[in-house]
Length: 412
Ligand code: SF4
Image 1 (cartoon, rainbow, N blue to C red):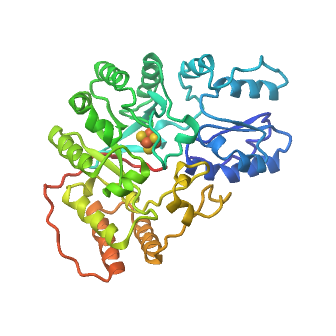
Image 2 (image 1 turned 30 degrees about the vertical axis):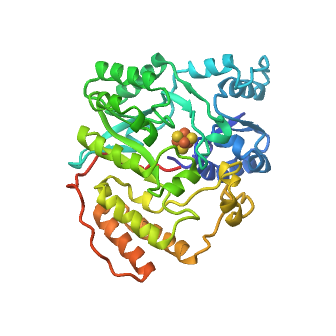
Image 3 (image 1 turned 90 degrees about the vertical axis):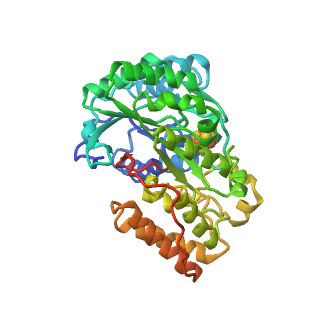
């Protein structure tokens, strides 16, 4: 959000950097190096989901304390120690008492930039609203093979108490939020908890809208609960489709099939509950013709206006300790861990696929705010050119409609 202001480090006695995502971690690396170079006397801490995953790299850059999620006790102890006030040894972050204390803390956003400066929700008519963010749970009970949450949470999730979530939302509504993004890895890991929350939210703020991320498997399995989302102000649901190829979905251990995606798409359309699908468009299993079929299939499902342009470009990330490395196919293409990108880089066996991915990324990067169907047509032309093919038009099955979305697209 901001550059480090001049003089910001003068009086610092302890510095802690939050690393909740891959991109955040890459952005943090130069900041950590600057901190270490300018104030080598100050203890440095990195915390959050991506800190333990990248511990070796962080320590090589001079980070003294590396903490994972639910680390609030340990973070406080590290800060007190830096001030010469050693605290009682904190409980391990995974202990029930430490976790309960961590989850009972209502986020204090004092000192952060005002909400207005963060991503907004943009409505189909062009209006924008201030968006806040809340967590109803942390972790995930699933173990999808490509997911960076899995090596840290190992199939666990924990619910944040409803009164804490609502207090957090209350503070953000007072600060101007008209929409809340639930940042849970999966909002329906605990569907009863989630529905109680959104019903309480809707009761207290009938005009407040929200969005959440829910996996296809849960949308299908909890089909009867979906009207309650639509009735409580849910503006859209982000769902990780990843692929429409059942063989790829099986390799990713996603827990859903193409038929599930089709059923969920139809059900959500009937309910007027917009889906925002996300994809892993480029994997070692992607072919040029497969990518063309994928584009055709998304158009046939009527989902083109639902897809944030960045989703056409995304490439499988093989992070440290990823379960993907269990697969022979991945080990065959993945190179050793690269501390610059914080991934195992990989090259597609068919060079045309990597060329296509770069071309799609460049096209989306030129004008990410162009109408989504214009970007889609341009990407399809690139894919056709890569295949040396002429296009046979595919008629959409349903009328297209714009959907609301966040001005900062979701990706890892
Ligand atoms: S990809 Fe989603 S559902 Fe799968 S483990 Fe990760 S957060 Fe959970």
